[in-house]
View 1: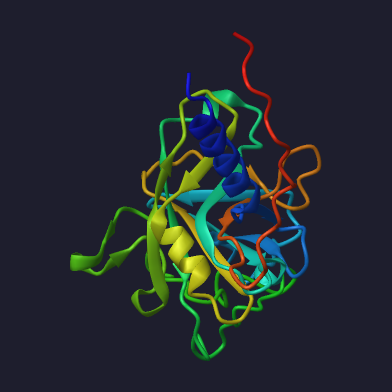
View 2: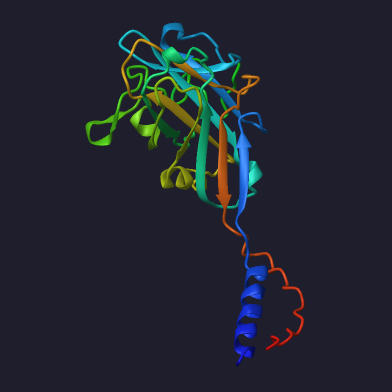
Length: 250
């Protein structure tokens, strides 16, 4: 039996695995660094709700509520994301209010200014309101995104980057994840080490539920988990020295 080629191939495969750069997972929450989250409410246009425990999102003919979520990307240290996942946890304990609803995830486009009287992307939780929220479309509380019709789910067209939608299940208080290539691309396009996501609801209904904010206590705050590309600038790890294999016993 000619066992030497098989042993050589096995050693080579082990060496390649040992020296190949590995992907890394970076997790950032709104409690980290300059992260922030807040609800803005059309019924209380000038009220500052950033210290509320819950991020309430509602789309109805009577009232509109949107969640503004900012992540501090300085932890990425300039590296690029191969994939990104946003996780939100429902904190509404009355499960009878939870329905089969769909939510928009909209990226806030970077801008030198969002208009007179509007806050910048470095908005403060203690200052943000429905009236001054950056990119907020005061005439639209949510609904389906339809770029051809100029509908951007509650964010002004010039500042909206639609990233996709996620669904929740009726009666189920749970953590819900959202992932898309558009989200990873949005992270990678960042130039100021922070991104803001706006969450609005597609479904028009009078009931409302909330997602846990950074002040939410026992529930998980908004979380962004990213798979990071290996740093090609770093030298590959050296494979451990191989030992001569013993021939099989016949």
